[in-house]
Image (cartoon, rainbow, N blue to C red; front, side, top):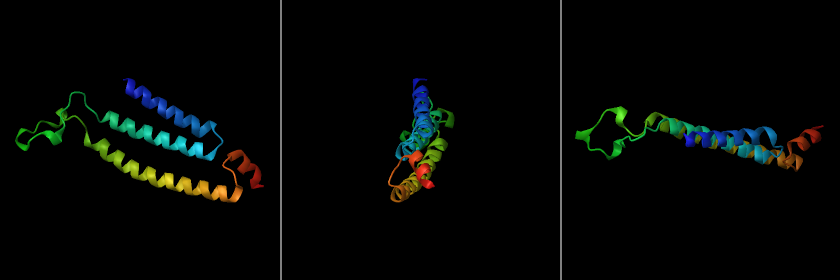
Length: 116
């Protein structure tokens, strides 16, 4: 239960960074924290307490899926999410670099003011 609470704390920190901060890099870090929090939550809901890892079992002694220690579906979703998150992070970083080249600042209120 404590792990779920800590995961929600990471999510709240990411939301706070995204909403309250004016610095563009801090907003990007907030988005990344939120992404990591969701990935961690998906992994946590796929875990089963006192389960058996299916890779460690010989083929003749296979047990029912309910006894496995992890659910492979959330793991596959998280792997896909990591790749998508990397692409969005690269896009956000590219936009931040272009904004810095044009306005010479990462401050969002300053960028709005300089926009004209």
